[in-house]
Length: 328
Image (cartoon, rainbow, N blue to C red; front, side):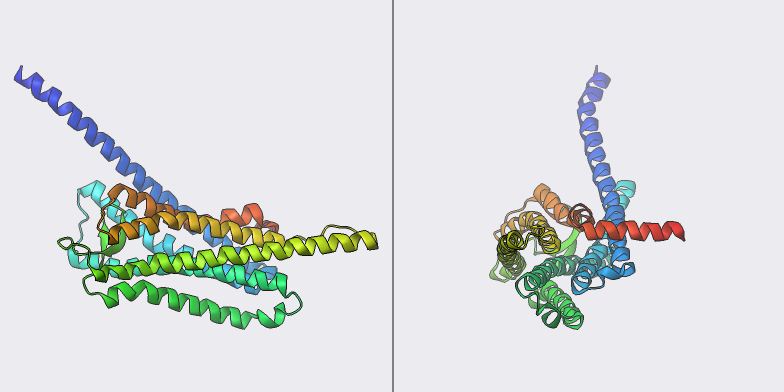
């Protein structure tokens, strides 16, 4: 009787443990799949941009910057999470001292934050470049040069990584730690303290990101309005001259691609902004933090898919790239 009773009482606990273990395995497999998708997708993007001559433009340089930032997430940030979770599932512990964990996260955490800011600022620069091309087509070559583009790219990287380290340098109580909820290296607050005024430095991230993303939306609206006006003018002239009334769609395609990238980042970053504001106010959203951060992380492998669907030049570049590979 006692033996049967103890067995029956342990069965629910074993079932819960098995379900929890299966959930952790699924999360680990998702992380591994994400590493492969981010690395391969952005490697293909970089090969297309470097090997195909028609992409060696100012816009191509900006897309290379975006791909490099995404690649860093796939090669540095996510693999560390895979390592920690694999150790936890295998040994039941991270098997890392607190000092080594802090050292690793002090490098990986700012890389994750900095690359995210680089991606958003690069999309902003892409939208500005496309707007200049539409509004000032005759002056584009003089205004948007490769040298200026490279300088802006370096500036965006410098500013983004400076912002990523501001919380760590300005407030000693904020550190970088591996978070068991988000499964990533995140900014950490003292566990035994209520939210203080120094925590508000974390709000620099949502303010900066939403300012850039909102500005990008406005710039894209101006671009589409100009494209629509150009189409109307072209059609009226085409009717008088009896030529084709179809305007070349290069600007429209590029503007659509940038708009979709902007919307993707806006959708991916919104949960993070909610989480950061909630953390500053003292709320602990463990399960929500995992989904929020990994939605943002998975955004690093969307770019190649967006290019492939919406950009015919990119698809042509892929065909040329793989044709060359097959011939070799």
